[in-house]
Structure formats: structure tokens, C-alpha cells
Length: 381
View 1 (tube, rainbow, N blue to C red):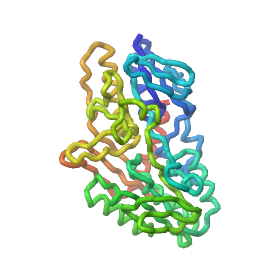
View 2 (cartoon, helix red, strand yellow; view 1 turned 90 degrees about the vertical axis):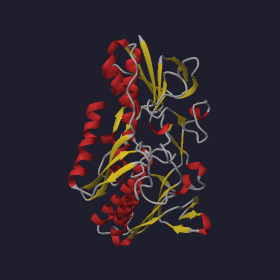
View 3 (cartoon, helix red, strand yellow; view 1 turned 90 degrees about the horizontal axis):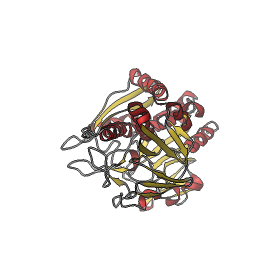
View 4 (spheres, one colour; view 1 turned 135 degrees about the vertical axis):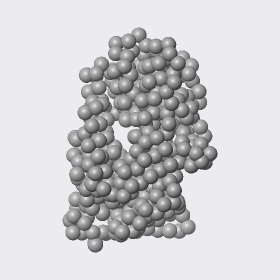
């Protein structure tokens, strides 16, 4: 029996495990290892933030995968012995024939002075719950949402959160008492897209009276202020941030990573420098053709990468040539509030530059996003 070990129970890990087990059945042992007992559907964090989702509705126990004969281990990965085909966890050693690394990123608030003390991480499940609690008693003042550094996953998410904050306070008749500001190190929203796309997001922010500050370098967070370079100080009554993203130390201690700390992979197969070892999702260092920038990180891309890797492992285990290739394509739906959303298509391998569309807000796109959340849990758990 062949063994595939999957490190990480996020979107990529869950999809890969399902695809492998469904195709291979008892001929392959599929094991998912994660230090967290639960899977969180992060696409719904913005709705959780404003109270339109309950935490329990977007959480699943990873052990539910065992109903599909997928083995789940609640363990911390401590060391990778890639030449020896062995992974060391705090519960013991595991060997494998194929390895899929889907460990995602960690949030390191401590690298921004004052973040941990004075801000909440809008990408962290527990902090999003705290944000919701803070919002329930917030009636006036300034909310500043800042992106600490690049790269960060799901580039549209901060803007989606701002649009939903606008909705939240308008529905309560408090919007005129609340100032909303978003601060980003990017030169524009959706910087990999054409200027027209970024301009359309700026226009919507302006229409909703949301201030945007671009090309900002965050130096530190104070009790009631965000400090940028050049002596810029932005007052704030509530500070929400996206913490710096790092790959887990267990990956940074290997020769898999580039000088940024992310895992080097083949652009088409997601294979690392070790045969039979693949990396997918947020931990990967995928540089775009021609322009050389890092590809955006998001669950939709982890999903597509997982499918390609699973299909190629299935082929290899059957003695066939692995012919499936990742195409750098995906879609995204940005909730813009009041039952509308913007549908986006992405082809980031397109030359000479990525192709990204962003349609106008529609109710259809909003309901498609709601439906996808339901589909996700039904299909994969």
C-alpha cells in the first residue's frame, strides 16, 4: 500500500486528501497532519466579523474526514527528513511515499511593535470573533485597517472587510459617526491587475466614504494610533490589521525555501526539488512569468493546486506518466455589502502580465458566494 502524507488541514490539504482517497480507495493510505483540530472556512471571516455568520457554521472538526477513511493526526510537525522520506511530529515519526506540504502561513504580530497589544488580526479566527465583539459596542470614532507587509494572502479580503464594515454601520444608522480608513503597502488595490481594475475599487471606496492610504510602510502600532514612515501618524479608536505572513519554522529549516522563506516549486507541477514532494497553497513561492512578482495567495489557488498534485500522485502510484499541469487560473467573489458582490477571474500565468477581471457588483455574485460556502462543507466534509 502506498502512503501519502499531507501536512496541513487547510483548503489545499482537505481537497488533496479527498481527491486521493476517492480515486485510490484502500490501495493508498492518506494521512492529514495538523496541529489545529479544526478546519476554518476563512472565506467567511468577513461575515463572521460583522455577525452574519456564527463561528460554529464555518468550523469543522478535521476528524470528520475519517468517515471517508482519511486518517487524521492532531500533531505538530517538528522536522522534515526529505532524503529519508520521514516526518517527525510531537507524536512520533511518519514515513511516506508521497508528501504534500500544505502548511500555509503563520501570523507574526510580534514583528510589528505594538501589534499584539493594540490591534486585532483580521485574518485570525479567534481575533475575528473579538472584532465582532468590539463592533457591537462601537458607536463612533475611527477604525483603521492596515496591511503590515507583503506578501499577504487573499488580496481582495481587506477591501471586502471594509465594504462590510460600511454596511454594518449604515444598517445601524451610525455610519456618519464612524470614519473608515484602509492602509496598504501596495501602490493600488489589486496591483497585479490592470490600472482599470484598481481604479474601480478606488472609486467604490470613495463612493462609500472609505479613505485609502497606499504605499504605506507600517513602523509600529500605538494604543490609539498607527505609525507610518516619514512621521505619519494616523489616529484610531479601533485598529484592525493583517499581520506579517511567514512560513512555519519547520519549512524555513529546510533547503526547500527561497530567500524569502517560501517554498520553491515547479510552476506547473508544484513539485519541489525532491521527487515525490509537493508544496501547495500559501507556503509556496510561485513567481509569475515575465514580471517575476509573487503570485497572489488564496484558497482558490490552493484548491486548484491540490487537484493537480493529487492527480499526478495517482498517476505515479499506478506507474503512469504524471501529465496534469497547474494553469494559474482561479476566481474570486468580493462581497461589497448589502447583498451584492463583485465576481473576479484570474489567470496569473498569462503573458506578458496576469489577466484579472473584476465585474460590477451584482446580487447574483453575492448568492454564488453564499452557495459556495454551503457547497464547500457538503462536498469536502
